[in-house]
Length: 404
Image 1 (cartoon, rainbow, N blue to C red):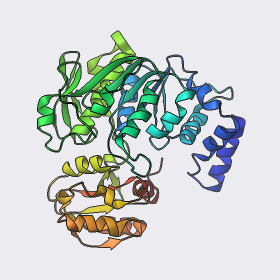
Image 2 (tube, helix red, strand yellow):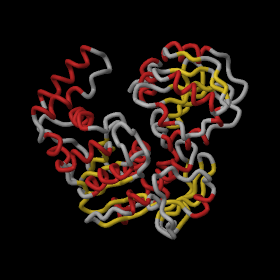
Image 3 (cartoon, rainbow, N blue to C red):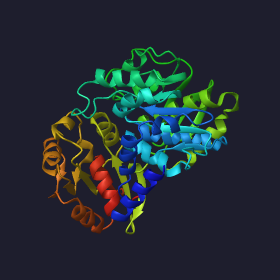
């Protein structure tokens, strides 16, 4: 603990606000048992949330619901979901004896790192969101992701809560009890492009926790046989599915103490995770941030954009090794991009142009692009909208002073 805190202090002195993963990297090498020891120390156990997409939002939803029910929760930032980031997050809160004052840990885990760490933790519950074609430089096929999630699911003692519409997840056979959540036939029928999963099951759930209807940021979700109205942090059926997963997991964890109205109020009050449909005021301008991480999230989020937006900036960064990976997504709804930026600006601009989107300007320097975009007059229609990949999201957050 003393070593980790010393490294953290040194990293922050060297770069204010930075070096957050360095302490975890050092501690994992010097004391490889630290992570597993702390994860095993919570009185009411550990909950792990993993999957291709929706991890950050689902984790935050679950934390908000449990907190509203009086639970003291330790959780990790969405950017700290790999091994060194997890350890650094634990170091932030752990005492000198390596313990954290919380009832329960709810941790988002990257599917790859979670599988590698699976022999170091035992979870009370594992929540799995979906399997999508994602990060082809890391996960070359969906079956590889399925195998990683199977390893994580194998560490659950009480229950595995999984997306019942995802065929690759429903094929898993963990030792713990399986609880499914999903959408109704009507919701699937209203999603002409599907739900984005690598494989979708043929039959919908006929009971349990399922999404009954979605309109913008409003959703009706069946919970314990009754329809619960909730407000989502951003528009789209994918956010409603995240909410269903969080509600299903909350029911399992809280048992008889679960209260649907308390859960709904917690979801209604929840702010978006940074970049996931978040609307903020920056330099006197209202801006919506839209994070796209894979083909499915690109499509689902672009489909939810208001038609005829007057000012859109699209930024693709170094996290995308091969921009052609995104070509199956139809970007036409963007209509017009005032600026295309990031280290992959030329490549994403080519896709946009090919798919009928007007591109006013290509500016690879993201800082300059952001400054110029925000300096534009207020749009005639809608609000300023920035669509970005993860690397560009982090750089945007830093440049605009939104870190932390």
